[in-house]
Each structure stands twice: as structure tokens, then as C-alpha cells.
Image (tube, rainbow, N blue to C red; front, side, top):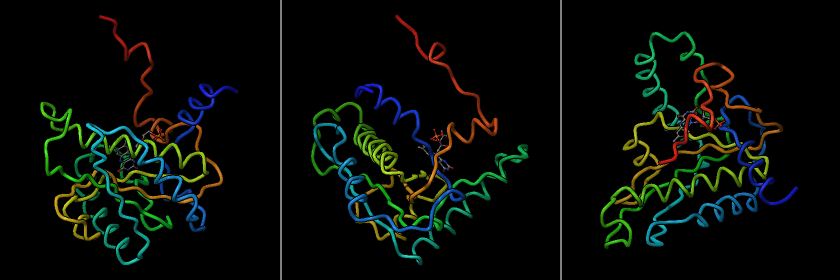
Length: 203
Ligand SMILES: Cc1cc2nc3c(=O)[nH]c(=O)nc-3n(C[C@H](O)[C@H](O)[C@H](O)COP(=O)(O)O)c2cc1C
């Protein structure tokens, strides 16, 4: 298999992994380093490298974040009240995973090349780092789940984030012995897969 096929296969086999699928095993320091190195290899606007990673192992902090999720998910349940499925979805793995990582964006103190017109490019750069981490985790048989049903300000307080930082992603990571072959929300018929020809237009 050549590099192109290998890379596409890793991308297509990456999954968002939720709390019912993790093994009870700590993530090794070497594997964590691979994931963080993947993160900081991402492209960033004006080479600003505006990312920070807060690694959360402390059970008390995880419990606080889980409570934050529960409050926000109750609000979400009301929004999706017509769905029989929503209340049964497992949408996080905060307590089931040995490691959570909050990926933060450090707001720049100076002008950034490339951000003078489009101000969201710094945040988008941090999302590039998250995607690199997700793909690297996949190669290490580490499942990663992105949790976004959280009150950002409360998360920042719980993790004692430095000033001038915002939350881009809250990630839950743990080893798994298998990955699902397609997105869970596709399997459960929450959403249909969009095909390439509906998504592209030549002008
Ligand atoms: C920005 C972002 C936020 C997400 N937030 C959540 C979340 O709060 N809970 C959850 O279960 N999945 C979350 N996901 C995972 C998506 O549901 C998942 O990526 C999608 O269903 C496709 O599945 P796959 O990642 O396994 O291919 C999030 C994904 C992204 C990119």
C-alpha cells in the first residue's frame, strides 16, 4: 500500500469514540507525546502556533466537567425533544477515559500575518491541530471523542486555564480494541452520509 492509500485509509477509519468503548488502560507517555507532537505539527496562520494543551487526569476535575456536560445535555434534550433517539445517545467519555485534553486557543497579543482580515483563522489553526491529534491517535489504537456539549467558561474555570485562552476542543482519549466501521450517527440513522458529487461544484 502506498502512502496515499495508507493516509486515506487512516482518515476513513478514524472514528469519534464515546464512553461505552474504552479499555481500562492508561495511555503511555510515549503515545501521548506522539499525539501532542502531531498536534503541534499542524499548520497555523502566520505560523502563530496559538495552541495550548491542558492534560487532565485528575478525577475531581473530570467529575466537574462531567457535571457540566450533564447540565448542558439536559438543555440539548429539550431542543431535540421530538427525537426518541437523542436521550439514548452516548455523547461523551469524560469519566471512562484515562485522559482528557482541553485544547485551547491563545488570543494573540500582536498582529498576526494572515489574520488581518479574517479574524477566526487563529481558532481554525487550533482545529487543524485537533484533527492531526485525532489521526495520530487512530494509528496508536487510541479512541478519541470530541465533547462540545459543555459550558466553555465553566470548563476554563475547572481546568484553571491561563487568561486570554478560549476552549476549542475538549477531547477524551483511551485505548480501544476495535473501531466502528462507520460513524455511529450514520448507523443510528441520525444523519445520512453526503456523497462527494453533492458536495462539489466546479465554477
Ligand atoms: C467540532 C466537533 C464537535 C463534536 N462534538 C461532539 C459531542 O459533543 N459529542 C459527541 O458524541 N460527538 C461529537 N463530535 C463527533 C461527531 O458526532 C462525529 O465526528 C460524527 O458523527 C462523524 O463520526 P466519526 O467522527 O466517527 O466519523 C464532534 C465532532 C466535531 C468535529
